[in-house]
Amino acid sequence: MTDRGGTAGVRPGARSVLLTLAAGQFLMALDSSVMNVSIAAVADDVGTTVTGIQGAITAYTLVMAMLMIPGGKVGVLIGRRRAFMIGCAVYGCGSLVTALAPNLPVLLLGWSFLEGVGAALILPAIVGLVAGNFTAERRAGAYGIVAAAGAVAIALGPLIGGLATTYFSWRWVFAGEVVVVLVILVFARRIADTISEERPRIDLGGALLSAGGLGVFVYGVLRSGEWGWFRPKPDAPSWLGVSMTVWLMLAGLFLVWLFLRWEARLVERGREPLVDPAMLRNKQLTGGLTMFFFQYLVQMGVFFVVPLYLSIALGLSALATGARILPLSMTLLAAAILIPRFLPDVSPRRVVRLGVLALLAGAIALMAALDLDAGAEIVTLPLLLIGLGMGALASQLGSVTVSAVPERQTAEVGGVQNAVTNLGASIGTALAGSLLIAALTSSFLASVEQNAAIPAEVKNQATVELASGVPFLSDAQLETALDTAGTSPEATEAALDANAEARLDGLRAALAILALASLLALFFTQRIPRNQPGRPGP
Image 1 (cartoon, rainbow, N blue to C red):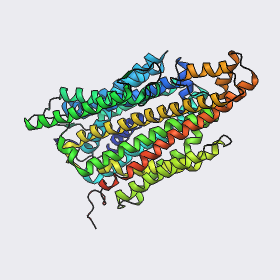
Image 2 (image 1 turned 180 degrees about the vertical axis):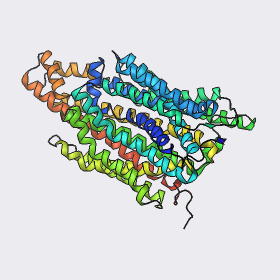
Image 3 (image 1 turned 90 degrees about the vertical axis):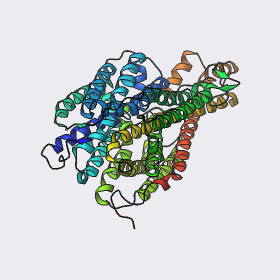
Image 4 (image 1 turned 135 degrees about the vertical axis):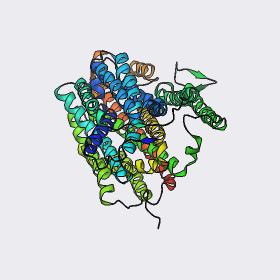
């Protein structure tokens, strides 16, 4: 590979290049958290439900996960700067469509599809462009700043979304993204391109198999709330008495297995694969990728569950919700930036383990903090712990994965890494959301059935209408619905109490699965190296 930017670490334009790439990373991460505090407002504005917006959030990360590996290959084929700029243009178009979306289908087109396609070109290109524009001595610091930009976006996302929703409209967030994209495109001309001496061919068969496998698997997880995990819900599709969720997940895993077999076959025939199977036998790389998966699974699950608790269970505004998430954001940002700066020789394995333990402790503390009489301040300490864990992982994992392979494979690793992170984000959002809805439904129906103050006809109606899934309702929304149905004050009060308890049960179930994922991640930290890349062993 020809490195045109090998002296970028000392040339005057290096700072401009780094800021441009960091701005691209910032935009990609921003969409992962900016709307989570405004889910209810977006749902009302486009005429859908919380589940519909959950689907849009999941679809955005799913599209990125499906296309990220082919996107990395496109960057090698046409040049990474060109792929970066085309991706920005597509992403900007998606942001404009989203800002003007009148309904959920248009929102899905702009936010979930166009922005997802743009991100699939941008993110792998950033990894390769950092490698091509900075010398080896400056490269680690550059990767750290780009990773910090993503942490800043996640940190500021809830507050930006809350401010826009409270004082203007959530649509202004996406309109602002269009402006940022235009600025990035102006400065992107200063980036030195990295041109491959070879002209690889896109493995279309592998691209279809990988995209199909990831897509089918996550779609099954997403529909679990409506269909049931194993036993199908009433009127839900099933086969052999088992929910289609299970069959879709199995089909997705089978397609991924076929993809890996296909890639191995291409290597045997001397043809270029979409992903070199030898990379997946790299212990350090697979360790880093596994931890990326768990980090984003827990991270996006938390960013889906906690804003719902603050905004709906406690009735906070979008702005107040964003402000309450700020402790998480601050510790995330501090850990991501300060650990590499002040502890450059610290053991990556030790930092990752401490980060995972902080995630686990934070999730358990948050479960314990949830209570009917708790105020919003009760989430502060758990969020501080969770943010510290996320930041600790972000400070190490990028360097671990990139240093595991030769420089010529950085774009390929970038594609795989971003596919894994977005797969984790998709599953985290879908898993936490579906378990939250399932536990809430079960708890609400049980409380209604056991409460003598609620008339039999109301119980029958609740059982029929809620057995296949229940929306995450605030007390005000439920009270309005009950008043419209002519329910007595006693029955209304009983239903409100049942709803409050059910919300907490749903939130605890979602947090429990995130805590379990954190605990499971500890078993994979052995693959993280003891020493920093380029540092001698003990």
